[in-house]
Amino acid sequence: MPSRILSIFGTRPEAIKMAPLVKQLEASSGIESVVCVTGQHQQMLDQVLDLFEIKPHHNLALMTGNQTLNGLAARLIASLDEVLATVQPDRVLVHGDTTTASAAALAAFHRRIPIGHVEAGLRTGNLMQPWPEEMNRRVVDVMSDLMFAPTASSRANLEQETLHGKIIVTGNTVIDALNLTTARIDNDAALCAELDARLPFLDGALPVLLVTGHRRESFGEGFANICAALAELASTNTVQIVYPVHLNPNVRGPVRESLGHARNVHLIDPLDYLSFVRLMQRASIILTDSGGVQEEAPALGKPVLVMRDVTERPEAVAAGTVRLVGTQCDSIVSAVLGLIEDARQRDEFAHRVNPYGDGHASRRIVAALTGRAVEEFASGGSTGGASGAGHPHAADVARVRFAATVH
Ligand code: UD1
Ligand code: UDP
Image (cartoon, rainbow, N blue to C red; front, side, top):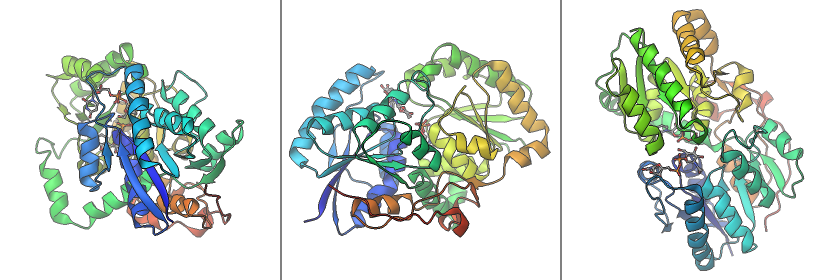
């Protein structure tokens, strides 16, 4: 009897990071793969499902406008309980640190269904930054019996806590998704040209500053500072800003209000992943508070300035391609202008490193789920572009072997 694995996810980043794993699960003979999307996100989730051609068996369509965390969590637990009762999975897989992840893990735990946590072990040590994600990822790990840690440092975080699950270092599946996507773009000149044509307003002579921002802890003053910094940068006429604005109304409102008419600022709707990866390739600098972008941009050789005070992704900071700049207007402006004016600094900042994965994380997770030997990923900061990252240098891969127990 194949093991019935239920993958549950609901937001854009979870979908991007679970997509390559779902494909591997579907292709595995020892596994019956069932997918449930919660619809915590709607349009931003559908974009990913379309791109990776994933047809969920269950779509709960739970999103409401400007949803509250408790309202969402309550709807998630009630609806997921029905799905668990119907599917009767041998195991549930959840991803990362969203409300979908923590509620799905709790619903599975209440039914005594084993939980595998993909992207386990990220920590800032501060429950309020990021809020509520730091709590979500911690409670999921408490309930999980398999923890798929992306890097050695996430494993070390887990080892410091009193947890009962087995830890396997797999690399982050985001690099699997990125490699699949860059391969499509890099091997198809017509597609590449079509993606570029979707942003006809871009001026070939000005460097592109790509911006994303959505964190709940930055709502209010944090976003006001970020917008003021962007307005000041745009007014220097040394950079063009492209900002695909997250659909959360707490982001959209203030951003549109303060930057809607600014010169050199292009506020656009969230891009599908293919278009966004192409835009990252074209960007000179990326300014973001996104977790996924912090993992992807180093693999593309793009300098990343992170508008946060702490990060749970220290690997790229250590590798020198990601820098924390906080959410104060002055520090954001001076960091961006410093990089624009100093080509040497930009070059140093922009070397390609892949501390987050080698493109084989999904394969390792499926091997562990089917009780096969796993060669763990070692985050040695391997160099190489995203497309070439599917072939890790032998020295970067720890030869650690074991067979994971599957329930
Ligand atoms: C959520 C996650 C966050 C993750 C982020 C990725 C939680 C608590 N937060 O934050 O960890 O980093 O997703 O983007 O799990 N909306 C739409 N359409 C969409 C998506 C969102 O209209 O496709 C609007 C809705 O009004 C929705 C609101 O955004 O109510 C907030 O969505 P929600 O998922 O609660 O929070 P995010 O800020 O997106
Ligand atoms: N992304 C995208 N379109 C966009 C902006 C981001 O496809 O317009 C991708 C990005 O490449 C990354 C993921 O979405 O893989 C990050 O999602 P988000 O920033 O919403 O969440 P986080 O990673 O911070 O949880």
